[in-house]
Length: 158
Image (cartoon, rainbow, N blue to C red; front, side, top):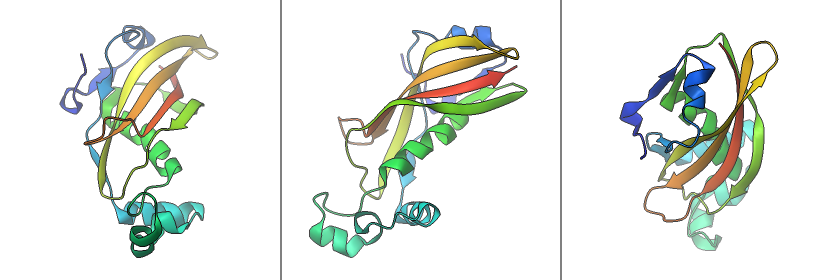
C-alpha cells in the first residue's frame, strides 16, 4: 500500500521509523519541473548545457524532443520531497549521502515528478542518533519508467 501525500507521516522516535521497514512506500505530491526551475538550477551550478537551457535549440537538435532537466536537479528534489512527506520531530537531522544513484530516463521540462520513499534500514549511530536508508524512486507522470532511483541516507537525532 502506498500512502498519499495527503497522509503525510509524522515520527518522533527511532521506533516509529523502524516500524516502516518493509512497509509500502510513502508517495510525495507531484511537482512541476518548469523551465524557470531548470534555468535557476543551471545558474546555481554553472551547468548551462543547451539541452537544459535553450528550448528552441533543444526542440530542433535534442534527441529528447525538447529541453530536459539536469539529472542532478532531479536528484536534488529528494530532500525537499521527503521533507514535505515526512515530519520528523527531532533535535536535528542531516543528509548523510547517497548510494546507487541511477538516472533511468529524462525529465522533459514541464513534467510532473514525484518521489516514493521506502525505509530500507534504520541503524543506531553515535550521540543517540539513527541512520536511515531510504529507497527512493522518482517518477514522471505518464511514464512507466522511473526517472531516477537512489538510496538516500539521512541521520536523525531525537
